[in-house]
Every structure is written in structure tokens, then in C-alpha cells.
Length: 353
Image (cartoon, rainbow, N blue to C red; front, side):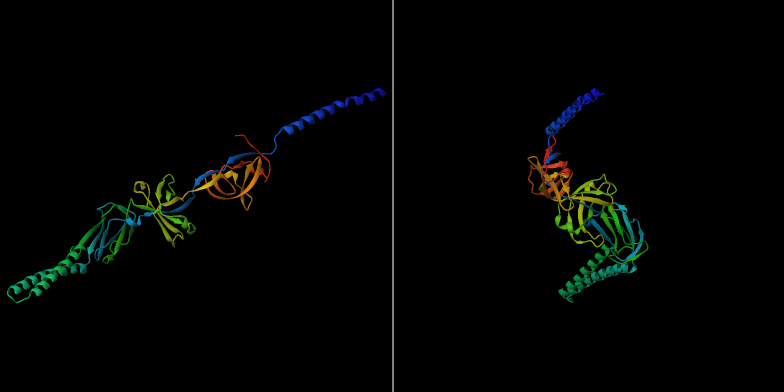
């Protein structure tokens, strides 16, 4: 029994030596492993950036290419061959207008005045030949004849010499407004309809008032029908109005649609447009480099293995990059991956490319 008690202590040193050896290996590995947070960096670059405004509007006929068809004289609208929104071609019938009796009577009276003035000129000439009239009286009679003839021609040009006439469209277009109805009695010079040139369209876009100062005529824009997203029309702004449209509460901006690109576009369609503002030189970084702490945007610049926080203001974003303004220079190395774990002044090691 005594011999067995003396043999036990000799078996303990082996586990202790193994533990010591294992601890040494861990310590060596810890010393061999590099320190610092593993991050990925990218350089700050200088590039040309430009903001894009997204606006919406509607396709309308070009105001400069809308024909107002007025009725030449008073009468009765006997027949209408077109309807609102209908396409018409040059020479198509529009309206049959029956001349009002009093209007036709004016023409007949003017015709009688011409006949009377002609006979008066002949009479004054005979009297002058007999020395019973003066040259001044002959001249006055001739003037009265010319005035009567001019009045007659004006009435004839207005269609008062016929019982009825058919008005035809002088251009190809679309009926955008119809102000008369069949059987309606109308006065002279009443507007019957508006005809818009079908191939001359403009996009009337609505702009927020605070953006008005950033636009000017000539800026490029891409117009697309809202419900036909595959169509893209490249154009430029033509007009920027200076007041708020009471219907939309926005400022109207007109962008003409090139005639060659009007195929497939329909008047009244809702459109969206991307207006490209003038570009400028700026410092840009990857979007992932910029962090926010609720109050301020910032990023980390790596200098000699140390990450330093730099507060920045952000600007125009385009694709995966964004404009930044702050204590930066082109070529600075900023953290784009692993920055969520960083603290100002912390050591970092960059991931190999």
C-alpha cells in the first residue's frame, strides 16, 4: 500500500508539459497574425457629374401649329363630318354652313350698289361730255364704284354669295376642340374648331417652383410615355414659363417632340421626362464608402494603416458613385468595405486585390 502511494506523483508532469506546449503554440500564432481591422479601400476620383430631374407631364399639340377655324359669316350649321379627336387630312370636309338670310341679303345689296355706281359713272361721263357736269363729279362717281366693288368682293370672299358652303381643312391634323353642333345657329367669326398638326407635338412638363432657377432652354431631356416605357424621345427644353399653372400648381416647361419620333405617340398621353442639368467637376467615391450617424455623412480615409474619419457633404449620385465635398483630395484611399466596424484612429489592414 505504501508503494502505490509513492508511485502516483511521477505520472503528473506529462499533461502539464503538453498544456505548456499548446499555450506556446497559441501565443506564437497570435504574434504571427497581423493586427487591425480587415478592410477594402478605393481611391477618391475626380469626375464630371450632373444631376437629373424626374418630371411628369402630358403630350399636347404645339401651340404654334394649331389652326383655329372660324365661320366666315352668320348661318346655320347644317352638317358636321368630324368629331372631337378625329384625324383629318388636307381637303377633308368639316362643316356645311347654310348662309343666314340677312347675310345673303347683304351680298345682294352690295351687288345692287355696284350696279348703281356703274350706271352713275356712265351718266356723269355723258354729262361731262355735254358740259353739264364737272370732272370732280366724275371722279366722285368712280370712287363710289370702286368702294362698292370692294365691299362686294369682301362679302363674296366670306361666302355670302352662296346659299350654303362646305368648309374643308387646309392641313393634316387632329380635331382638338369642337365648339359647334349640328343645327346650331352661329354668328360671323365664331370659332368652330381647333385643328392641331398631328406631327407637331410638345411635352408640357410640370416643374417644382424651387427648381426653376436651375433650368434654362436648351437643356437635354429624355421623354417617355408613362404606359409605353419602351419608347424614348431625345429632345431639348424650348420654353420655361415664369408662373405657376393654376391647374397643376407647377411651372410649365415645354419640350418639342421631333417630327421623326412622333410615331406611336398619342395626343393627351401622360409622359415622364428626365432633364439632365449642366455637369460639373467633382470628387466622387463609391456609395458604400459614405456612412451616416444620424446627423452627418462621413467616411474613413486610410493613411499609413490608420483610418481617420472625415465628415463630408454628399451631392449628385450617379450609378454606384456619389459626389462628396469635404477635406478630401483625388487619390485619397477611402474604406468601401468593412467601414461599419471602424472607429476614428483605428488600425486597419487592406485586403489584397
